[in-house]
Length: 157
Image (cartoon, rainbow, N blue to C red):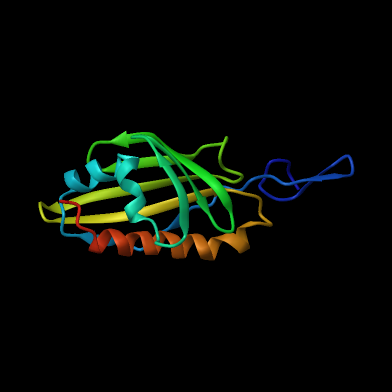
């Protein structure tokens, strides 16, 4: 096996785990709000908590472009905005000082009409091949549940 191929590498009798690059994509959602309204909302973490599943998050702390919170049973984690493309893309990354596991999440917005925006969420966990089967299903469910919340959310409030 080649070193760095994303598979188990055996080096001098030690086994090391190379992280995999895997992307977990949500279904494509539809919102009756404009791409501008949704973008403005999701680029401010002071708003973001209301999109997360109720009862799953505690200890929420946020500033405009960074947040941290407790997710049981995973522990404390944090997010920061690392890239914004007006009205079309917001990319978040885990904050190493809060997060045991590193990951990237991005939300893509596609304007169809002023009152029809399509939304897609992609999660890229930076984990070993051994962890992937345990987290892939729950992350897909999380991405789809976030889409469901966005589809029914009132971004005008």
